[in-house]
Image (tube, rainbow, N blue to C red; front, side):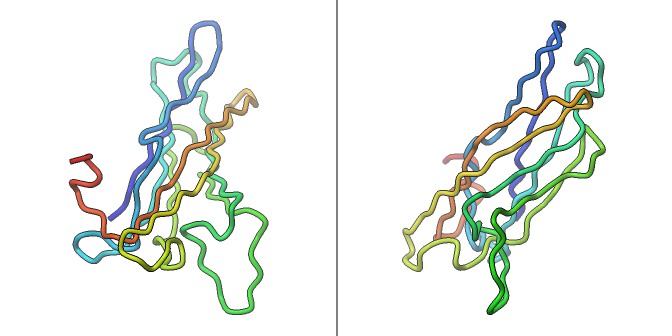
Length: 151
Protein backbone atom coordinates (compact mmCIF):
# COMPACT_ATOMS: atom_id res chain seq x y z
CA UNK A 1 0.00 0.00 0.00
CA UNK A 2 1.24 3.42 -0.82
CA UNK A 3 0.17 6.36 1.32
CA UNK A 4 -0.04 9.52 -0.79
CA UNK A 5 0.63 12.93 0.73
CA UNK A 6 -0.51 15.83 -1.43
CA UNK A 7 1.28 19.16 -1.03
CA UNK A 8 -0.45 22.05 -2.78
CA UNK A 9 1.08 25.44 -3.56
CA UNK A 10 -1.33 28.38 -3.43
CA UNK A 11 -0.68 31.91 -4.67
CA UNK A 12 -2.91 34.96 -4.43
CA UNK A 13 -3.13 37.92 -6.81
CA UNK A 14 -0.75 39.92 -4.58
CA UNK A 15 1.94 37.26 -5.13
CA UNK A 16 1.75 35.74 -1.63
CA UNK A 17 2.32 31.99 -1.36
CA UNK A 18 1.02 29.38 1.06
CA UNK A 19 1.09 25.59 1.30
CA UNK A 20 -1.48 23.01 2.27
CA UNK A 21 -0.81 19.35 2.94
CA UNK A 22 -3.12 16.38 3.10
CA UNK A 23 -2.95 14.45 5.33
CA UNK A 24 -1.06 16.48 7.91
CA UNK A 25 -0.25 13.31 9.86
CA UNK A 26 -0.01 10.19 7.72
CA UNK A 27 -0.50 6.80 9.39
CA UNK A 28 1.71 3.96 8.16
CA UNK A 29 2.70 0.50 9.31
CA UNK A 30 5.28 -2.10 8.39
CA UNK A 31 2.55 -4.06 6.56
CA UNK A 32 -1.03 -3.48 5.48
CA UNK A 33 -4.13 -5.68 5.71
CA UNK A 34 -2.95 -7.71 2.71
CA UNK A 35 0.54 -8.23 4.22
CA UNK A 36 2.03 -5.87 1.63
CA UNK A 37 4.76 -3.33 2.37
CA UNK A 38 3.72 0.26 3.06
CA UNK A 39 5.53 3.33 1.73
CA UNK A 40 4.85 7.06 1.30
CA UNK A 41 4.71 9.15 -1.85
CA UNK A 42 4.63 12.96 -1.86
CA UNK A 43 2.94 14.73 -4.77
CA UNK A 44 3.51 18.44 -5.45
CA UNK A 45 0.41 20.14 -6.89
CA UNK A 46 -0.46 23.65 -7.90
CA UNK A 47 -3.79 25.09 -8.93
CA UNK A 48 -3.49 26.04 -12.61
CA UNK A 49 -5.47 29.23 -11.87
CA UNK A 50 -2.65 30.53 -9.62
CA UNK A 51 -1.29 33.83 -10.96
CA UNK A 52 1.91 33.19 -12.94
CA UNK A 53 1.25 29.44 -13.22
CA UNK A 54 3.41 27.39 -13.00
CA UNK A 55 5.10 28.63 -9.82
CA UNK A 56 6.13 25.36 -8.13
CA UNK A 57 9.63 24.11 -8.87
CA UNK A 58 10.63 21.43 -6.35
CA UNK A 59 9.54 19.66 -3.15
CA UNK A 60 11.87 18.19 -0.55
CA UNK A 61 10.78 16.11 2.45
CA UNK A 62 13.51 15.96 5.12
CA UNK A 63 13.73 13.76 8.19
CA UNK A 64 16.23 15.21 10.68
CA UNK A 65 15.64 12.22 13.00
CA UNK A 66 17.63 9.43 11.40
CA UNK A 67 16.96 6.62 11.00
CA UNK A 68 13.58 7.64 9.63
CA UNK A 69 10.80 5.06 9.22
CA UNK A 70 12.16 4.42 5.72
CA UNK A 71 15.93 4.26 6.31
CA UNK A 72 17.57 1.18 4.88
CA UNK A 73 21.01 0.56 6.36
CA UNK A 74 23.68 -2.06 6.03
CA UNK A 75 25.64 -3.44 8.93
CA UNK A 76 28.52 -1.12 9.80
CA UNK A 77 27.15 1.68 7.60
CA UNK A 78 26.97 5.10 9.25
CA UNK A 79 23.73 7.07 9.14
CA UNK A 80 23.47 10.36 7.25
CA UNK A 81 22.84 13.59 9.18
CA UNK A 82 19.37 13.81 7.56
CA UNK A 83 17.29 11.82 5.10
CA UNK A 84 15.93 13.72 2.08
CA UNK A 85 13.36 12.86 -0.57
CA UNK A 86 13.38 15.38 -3.42
CA UNK A 87 11.21 15.66 -6.51
CA UNK A 88 12.79 16.48 -9.82
CA UNK A 89 12.68 20.20 -10.59
CA UNK A 90 9.65 19.74 -12.82
CA UNK A 91 6.93 21.63 -10.94
CA UNK A 92 3.30 20.69 -10.41
CA UNK A 93 2.66 16.96 -10.58
CA UNK A 94 6.21 16.08 -9.52
CA UNK A 95 6.42 13.23 -7.02
CA UNK A 96 8.89 11.26 -4.94
CA UNK A 97 8.46 8.02 -2.97
CA UNK A 98 10.15 6.35 -0.01
CA UNK A 99 11.32 2.82 0.54
CA UNK A 100 8.89 0.63 2.53
CA UNK A 101 8.47 1.28 6.26
CA UNK A 102 11.25 -0.57 8.07
CA UNK A 103 10.73 -3.04 10.96
CA UNK A 104 12.94 -0.94 13.28
CA UNK A 105 10.70 2.14 12.82
CA UNK A 106 8.39 1.09 15.68
CA UNK A 107 8.54 -1.09 18.81
CA UNK A 108 7.81 -4.81 18.68
CA UNK A 109 4.54 -4.88 20.69
CA UNK A 110 1.30 -4.94 18.69
CA UNK A 111 0.04 -1.58 20.01
CA UNK A 112 3.36 0.30 19.73
CA UNK A 113 3.40 3.57 17.80
CA UNK A 114 6.12 6.09 16.96
CA UNK A 115 5.88 9.65 15.65
CA UNK A 116 8.42 11.09 13.23
CA UNK A 117 8.48 14.83 12.58
CA UNK A 118 9.75 15.93 9.18
CA UNK A 119 9.85 19.09 7.07
CA UNK A 120 8.35 19.68 3.66
CA UNK A 121 10.01 22.47 1.71
CA UNK A 122 8.62 23.76 -1.58
CA UNK A 123 10.74 25.98 -3.79
CA UNK A 124 9.11 28.30 -6.30
CA UNK A 125 10.36 29.48 -9.68
CA UNK A 126 10.99 32.95 -8.21
CA UNK A 127 13.27 31.45 -5.50
CA UNK A 128 10.83 31.60 -2.59
CA UNK A 129 10.95 28.78 -0.03
CA UNK A 130 7.91 27.60 1.93
CA UNK A 131 8.08 25.10 4.80
CA UNK A 132 5.64 22.85 6.67
CA UNK A 133 6.39 20.43 9.53
CA UNK A 134 3.97 17.45 9.42
CA UNK A 135 4.29 14.00 11.02
CA UNK A 136 4.46 10.34 10.09
CA UNK A 137 2.77 8.06 12.63
CA UNK A 138 4.09 4.50 12.48
CA UNK A 139 2.02 1.69 13.98
CA UNK A 140 3.13 -1.88 14.61
CA UNK A 141 -0.41 -3.11 14.02
CA UNK A 142 -1.41 -3.49 10.36
CA UNK A 143 -3.12 -0.56 8.69
CA UNK A 144 -6.33 -1.12 6.80
CA UNK A 145 -8.44 0.96 4.43
CA UNK A 146 -10.67 1.75 7.43
CA UNK A 147 -7.63 3.06 9.35
CA UNK A 148 -6.86 5.42 6.51
CA UNK A 149 -10.47 6.57 6.21
CA UNK A 150 -10.74 7.09 9.97
CA UNK A 151 -13.42 4.48 10.65
